[in-house]
Figure 1: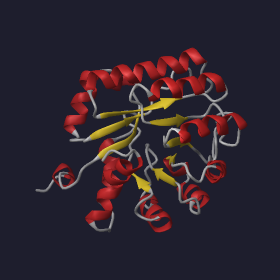
Figure 2 (figure 1 turned 135 degrees about the horizontal axis):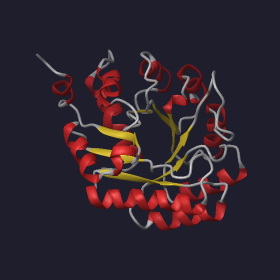
Figure 3 (figure 1 turned 90 degrees about the vertical axis):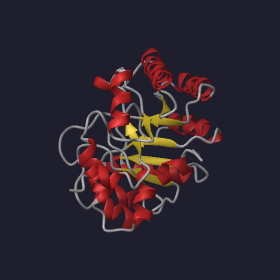
Figure 4 (figure 1 turned 30 degrees about the vertical axis):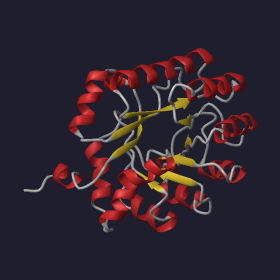
Length: 258
């Protein structure tokens, strides 16, 4: 019987969207998961201390926690710098400091919209350093959104302002049919489909609209199921070379991992 892990061993796999909260704050447990899933590496997007509008101290706590976990686990952890651009000067200081500590990209969550002038200033600093910028973007049909949660259309507007920059829109914008179309004409925006949403058809539409170089595998671990997420890639009716780009090749190129 061929198992899912047997199929995965044909590929290099990097999880490009994870968080160091819950069990993943424990370095030993995280290392065990990396080994169990046979992951080459995992992008760590902070523990998001402070909720929707974190203070500078809370942002700094998040980045320190990411750094400590990276130091404990090793270079299989790819740390992104988390900022709140509403505190512009502090966000710029965080980019300056953590770029010297081996962090490799910028992470925005929901503290300010992509169209905010402060967002543009902080994005400019990251792009000048050659950092990719990952932005949580959601198009919500139901329920109340966080006050400053950005939408896929706003994500597209930011990316067009920095054509020389590289962006990743997380979650394919949640409603993938809307999210993918919103950024389809932005060649500098890749997407991940991390999370528990994980509807069949999302990866297929992403590849059809964006091409094989703009779709990135991520899970949102530990808040989602690894096997369900990776299974969506394995079941694609595409060549193994395309699956390999999605599972690792694209994020390796985006982060210049060699």
